[in-house]
Amino acid sequence: MKTRYVLLLCLSFLLVACSHKEVEIKPDEKKIVVEKEQSSLSENQSSSDLVAETFIKTYIEQSFEKENLDQKESDLRRLAGDSSLDTALSDLSALKSELAEYRKTKTIRTSASFILVERELVALEVYKNGEKYFVSVKFKETSPAYSGEIERRMQYKFKVHDSKIFQFEEIL
Image (cartoon, rainbow, N blue to C red):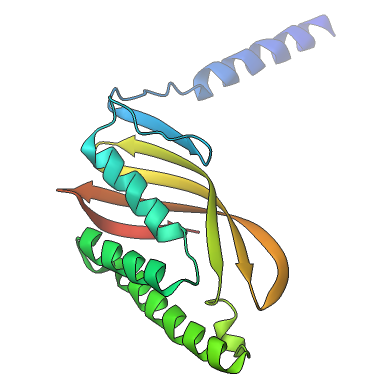
Protein backbone atom coordinates (compact mmCIF):
# COMPACT_ATOMS: atom_id res chain seq x y z
CA MET A 1 0.00 0.00 0.00
CA LYS A 2 2.83 2.38 0.90
CA THR A 3 4.58 1.64 -2.38
CA ARG A 4 1.50 2.60 -4.38
CA TYR A 5 1.23 5.84 -2.46
CA VAL A 6 4.92 6.64 -3.00
CA LEU A 7 4.66 5.68 -6.68
CA LEU A 8 1.55 7.84 -7.09
CA LEU A 9 3.26 10.74 -5.34
CA CYS A 10 6.36 10.43 -7.56
CA LEU A 11 4.23 10.29 -10.70
CA SER A 12 2.37 13.40 -9.56
CA PHE A 13 5.61 15.31 -9.08
CA LEU A 14 6.88 14.08 -12.45
CA LEU A 15 3.67 15.20 -14.13
CA VAL A 16 3.88 18.64 -12.53
CA ALA A 17 7.54 18.99 -13.49
CA CYS A 18 6.87 17.99 -17.11
CA SER A 19 3.92 20.33 -17.49
CA HIS A 20 5.58 23.34 -15.83
CA LYS A 21 6.12 26.22 -18.26
CA GLU A 22 8.33 29.17 -17.61
CA VAL A 23 6.90 32.47 -18.68
CA GLU A 24 9.34 35.04 -19.94
CA ILE A 25 8.44 38.66 -19.33
CA LYS A 26 9.89 40.86 -21.99
CA PRO A 27 11.63 44.01 -20.79
CA ASP A 28 9.54 46.29 -23.02
CA GLU A 29 6.22 45.10 -21.59
CA LYS A 30 4.65 47.77 -19.44
CA LYS A 31 1.47 48.13 -17.47
CA ILE A 32 -0.15 51.51 -17.05
CA VAL A 33 -3.11 51.73 -14.69
CA VAL A 34 -5.32 54.79 -14.62
CA GLU A 35 -8.02 55.39 -12.06
CA LYS A 36 -10.44 58.22 -12.67
CA GLU A 37 -9.20 60.11 -9.65
CA GLN A 38 -5.56 59.86 -10.71
CA SER A 39 -3.64 60.91 -13.74
CA SER A 40 -1.15 58.47 -15.11
CA LEU A 41 0.74 61.14 -16.98
CA SER A 42 4.26 60.74 -15.72
CA GLU A 43 7.71 61.78 -16.78
CA ASN A 44 8.70 58.28 -17.88
CA GLN A 45 5.62 57.70 -20.04
CA SER A 46 6.36 57.68 -23.78
CA SER A 47 4.47 59.75 -26.33
CA SER A 48 2.93 56.52 -27.68
CA ASP A 49 1.64 55.73 -24.19
CA LEU A 50 0.06 59.18 -24.02
CA VAL A 51 -1.51 58.70 -27.46
CA ALA A 52 -2.91 55.31 -26.39
CA GLU A 53 -4.33 56.70 -23.15
CA THR A 54 -5.79 59.80 -24.82
CA PHE A 55 -7.31 57.69 -27.59
CA ILE A 56 -9.05 55.21 -25.32
CA LYS A 57 -10.42 57.99 -23.10
CA THR A 58 -11.72 59.76 -26.21
CA TYR A 59 -13.18 56.53 -27.59
CA ILE A 60 -14.99 55.53 -24.37
CA GLU A 61 -16.22 58.82 -22.88
CA GLN A 62 -19.36 60.16 -24.47
CA SER A 63 -21.88 62.85 -23.60
CA PHE A 64 -24.97 64.24 -25.28
CA GLU A 65 -23.43 67.71 -25.68
CA LYS A 66 -23.02 68.56 -29.38
CA GLU A 67 -19.69 70.33 -28.82
CA ASN A 68 -18.28 67.27 -27.03
CA LEU A 69 -19.50 64.93 -29.77
CA ASP A 70 -17.98 67.16 -32.46
CA GLN A 71 -14.68 67.24 -30.55
CA LYS A 72 -14.76 63.46 -30.12
CA GLU A 73 -15.32 63.00 -33.86
CA SER A 74 -12.48 65.40 -34.69
CA ASP A 75 -10.11 63.66 -32.26
CA LEU A 76 -10.95 60.18 -33.57
CA ARG A 77 -10.42 61.31 -37.18
CA ARG A 78 -7.08 62.86 -36.21
CA LEU A 79 -5.95 59.67 -34.43
CA ALA A 80 -7.16 57.20 -37.08
CA GLY A 81 -4.26 55.57 -38.88
CA ASP A 82 -6.33 53.07 -40.84
CA SER A 83 -9.96 52.08 -41.39
CA SER A 84 -10.29 50.26 -38.04
CA LEU A 85 -11.98 53.33 -36.48
CA ASP A 86 -14.55 53.68 -39.29
CA THR A 87 -17.20 51.83 -37.28
CA ALA A 88 -16.66 54.10 -34.27
CA LEU A 89 -17.00 57.17 -36.49
CA SER A 90 -20.13 55.74 -38.10
CA ASP A 91 -21.63 55.02 -34.66
CA LEU A 92 -20.83 58.58 -33.63
CA SER A 93 -22.69 59.95 -36.66
CA ALA A 94 -25.64 57.69 -35.82
CA LEU A 95 -25.59 58.96 -32.23
CA LYS A 96 -25.72 62.57 -33.41
CA SER A 97 -28.72 61.79 -35.64
CA GLU A 98 -30.55 59.83 -32.95
CA LEU A 99 -29.84 62.54 -30.39
CA ALA A 100 -31.28 65.23 -32.68
CA GLU A 101 -34.36 63.07 -33.28
CA TYR A 102 -34.75 62.35 -29.56
CA ARG A 103 -34.52 66.04 -28.67
CA LYS A 104 -37.27 66.84 -31.20
CA THR A 105 -39.71 64.00 -30.49
CA LYS A 106 -38.70 62.75 -27.00
CA THR A 107 -39.11 59.20 -28.32
CA ILE A 108 -36.46 56.53 -28.77
CA ARG A 109 -36.54 54.14 -31.66
CA THR A 110 -35.82 50.57 -30.60
CA SER A 111 -32.72 50.36 -32.78
CA ALA A 112 -31.39 53.57 -31.24
CA SER A 113 -31.53 52.37 -27.64
CA PHE A 114 -28.04 50.88 -27.86
CA ILE A 115 -26.63 54.00 -29.51
CA LEU A 116 -28.20 56.70 -27.35
CA VAL A 117 -25.90 56.36 -24.34
CA GLU A 118 -23.64 58.59 -22.30
CA ARG A 119 -20.44 57.01 -20.96
CA GLU A 120 -18.13 57.94 -18.13
CA LEU A 121 -14.77 56.24 -17.71
CA VAL A 122 -14.27 54.68 -14.27
CA ALA A 123 -11.00 52.75 -14.61
CA LEU A 124 -8.48 52.00 -17.31
CA GLU A 125 -5.66 49.45 -17.49
CA VAL A 126 -3.23 49.67 -20.38
CA TYR A 127 -0.72 46.94 -21.18
CA LYS A 128 2.02 47.57 -23.72
CA ASN A 129 4.32 45.36 -25.76
CA GLY A 130 6.25 47.41 -28.31
CA GLU A 131 3.70 49.20 -30.51
CA LYS A 132 0.90 46.86 -29.40
CA TYR A 133 -1.52 47.86 -26.67
CA PHE A 134 -4.11 45.87 -24.77
CA VAL A 135 -6.63 47.96 -22.84
CA SER A 136 -9.18 46.92 -20.25
CA VAL A 137 -11.74 49.58 -19.36
CA LYS A 138 -14.55 49.93 -16.87
CA PHE A 139 -17.15 52.61 -17.49
CA LYS A 140 -20.64 53.70 -16.46
CA GLU A 141 -23.33 53.97 -19.10
CA THR A 142 -26.62 55.89 -18.86
CA SER A 143 -29.40 56.34 -21.38
CA PRO A 144 -32.88 57.81 -21.60
CA ALA A 145 -33.91 54.32 -22.79
CA TYR A 146 -33.53 52.89 -19.27
CA SER A 147 -33.39 54.13 -15.71
CA GLY A 148 -30.24 54.06 -13.64
CA GLU A 149 -26.78 53.30 -14.88
CA ILE A 150 -25.02 50.20 -16.10
CA GLU A 151 -21.39 49.49 -15.31
CA ARG A 152 -19.60 47.74 -18.16
CA ARG A 153 -16.17 46.31 -18.80
CA MET A 154 -14.64 46.08 -22.25
CA GLN A 155 -11.27 45.09 -23.68
CA TYR A 156 -9.56 46.36 -26.80
CA LYS A 157 -6.30 45.92 -28.64
CA PHE A 158 -4.57 48.22 -31.09
CA LYS A 159 -1.22 49.52 -32.29
CA VAL A 160 0.19 53.02 -31.98
CA HIS A 161 2.59 54.11 -34.70
CA ASP A 162 3.58 57.71 -35.45
CA SER A 163 0.88 58.96 -33.04
CA LYS A 164 -1.84 57.14 -35.00
CA ILE A 165 -4.10 54.22 -34.04
CA PHE A 166 -3.97 51.07 -36.19
CA GLN A 167 -5.70 47.69 -36.07
CA PHE A 168 -8.17 48.75 -33.37
CA GLU A 169 -10.53 45.99 -32.33
CA GLU A 170 -12.75 44.97 -29.46
CA ILE A 171 -11.86 41.71 -27.79
CA LEU A 172 -14.94 39.62 -27.25
